[in-house]
Length: 285
Image 1 (cartoon, rainbow, N blue to C red):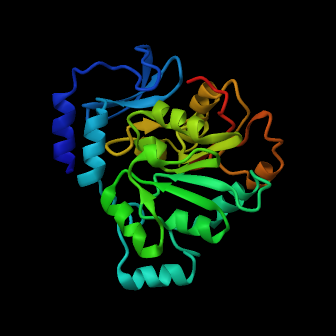
Image 2: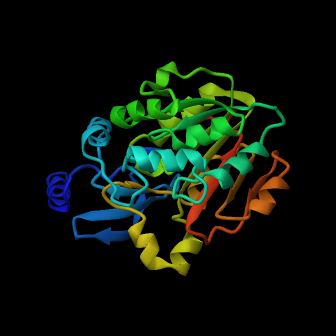
Image 3: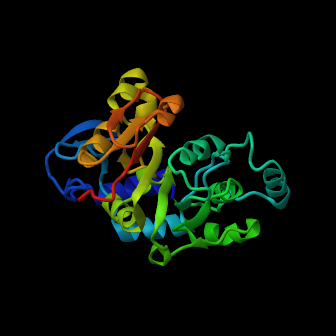
């Protein structure tokens, strides 16, 4: 979808209700704007920052099947046969799809020899592949059928129906997915359904926290828009996970290994990427 098409769609929906897509509150504060037509609003109740006009679930599904493109060489581009061969030969080391740092963190969350993990929003399977190489038992889910089909080239079976995912999961992992979703609560409920009592929900996303906004307002401004209708912050995660153990940060990998997994901690949240690790099994959403 071109910028002009996006702006026209925003204009046509400019009078739609400005209601938080997470908690449905109509109490909010505008924190940013783009092109006059679109605004970023922070919910007074759950602290989610959401773009208005808001996309419908049906539009979102169609958009990610047919129109979604990110020309960054990472997100939506599928590699050529030669590029794929080189990526596999190095297990993606040093590439934009190298998830070894995050996988090392996931290893600290379970004492099992082969923890089970759901890779939610698996794209064409590069993270799932690396998780499999690291010894995880992996279930993969991706909304986009073309990217899911591509996963077969690297031996990754990627489901496109989340109802086919099996429960008893140790880790529900998603990286740079939550900022795209029209219904975040639905993903939380799915994770809760699939996880074991001691399982962890783990999410990575662009950092919309107040510390990052203060440090780099231009980057904060770029973190939301057409393909990122949600802007996630430490404040949001601390609010919605207020009744369960969590660890929230933007770096602090050494601190993660020392977390007791039963307390609530917020580390430094001034970096570009935000993460949350939470034991959500008993959470009510």
